Amino acid sequence: MPVAAPVLRPAQTGGGSSVPVHVAIIMDGNGRWAAARGLPRVAGHRAGAEAVTRTLRAAARRGVGYLTLYAFSSENWRRTPEEVTDLTSLLRYYLRHKVAELHRENVRIRFIGDLERFGRDLVDELRRAEHLTAANTGLTLQLALSYGGRGELALAARRLAEAVARGDLCADQIDEEALSGCLLTAGVPDPDVIVRTSGEHRLSNFLLWQGAYAELVFTDVLWPDFDEAQFEVVLRIYAGRERRFGARPGG
Ligand code: FPP
Image (cartoon, rainbow, N blue to C red):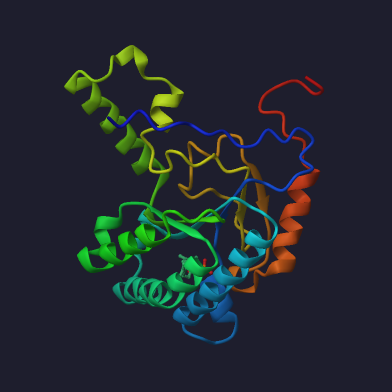
């Protein structure tokens, strides 16, 4: 029954003085970082993986509950076969070398996206990492892989239609909560803030439903240069925002 998962809303932070519960990041600019140094694109992705580790530590230290990183979009399959191979190899390397360490640090790992496209071997590794860390109580790292928000919404619609066809659900029971419960992120609070690096000002199919009330923060910093100091800047910007969730000022 796909509609039962609880919908957790982002912390209602009022004046926005607290640390966000859920930070989501569109990690962009690896290629430009490499090009500026006369390096191949894969060097930018490797440096980007180091920025992932730094950001994860910074988020955990500041008490962020959930960190979602857009590591591979459903559109990234259109890159050259060489770059797709570089990115999947890097992901495999990261899993093999970092999962045990993340587990020791009490990090829970989840993956969202059309994971089957990566092939059985990698999917098995992803599932093992999720299984190993499932009971951890620290920060949840949610990696979006072969992920696209529109595809996720189409999947949720399909799941709801199937539940109706089975007789488990009436069409008039389909509401926001039912749809949220059919998303890949079911059970995870919506992001409080979505960050995009590298000066681009787009969501690029990232968390389209879940980001409805997220604060958007754009920075010119290229992802491989992102570090603890940059993360602190994001937290400061977030703390300075007034979140009203559609309500009137002071309401
Ligand atoms: C965007 O930069 C970045 C990606 C498409 C991949 C993100 C991957 C990583 C940060 C490293 C691997 C991650 C993990 C978790 C091991 P771009 O290539 O589009 O940069 P550009 O816009 O400057 O060309």
